[in-house]
Amino acid sequence: MIKDKKPITLAEARELLKQSDSEKAKALSDFMKKFVKITAADSEKYRKGLDELNIAKLREEDIVKLIDILPEDAEDIRKIFSGTEVNLDQNEISKVLEILKHKK
Image 1 (tube, rainbow, N blue to C red):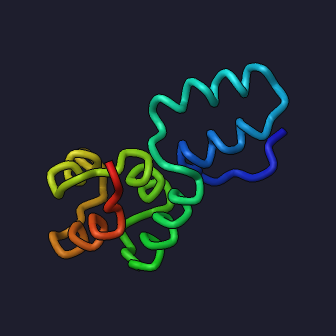
Image 2 (image 1 turned 90 degrees about the vertical axis):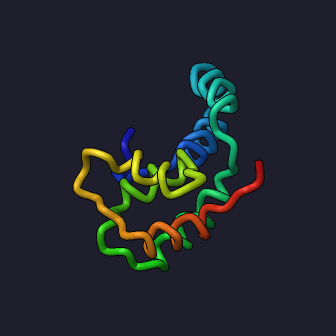
């Protein structure tokens, strides 16, 4: 059943799957463990930080994409948004990267 329609990160999706009693959901959650390197709490922290930047060019879907990929440099961000309408300037890119610093 659909309760809400909003973009969520892979970490948030994995957390929702872990709460399910379904065997399929648990199997998918285990599979996602290979790709999702942050927790849902970290994901929420990144989302809040990016929201607070108030970059009008970034929609909620773009923020989710940035959190899922966790770009490491300006070139990564440019590649993520290549072919889209999102065109961040160097200052905005620097602010985004500062928020998305993460442990490896």
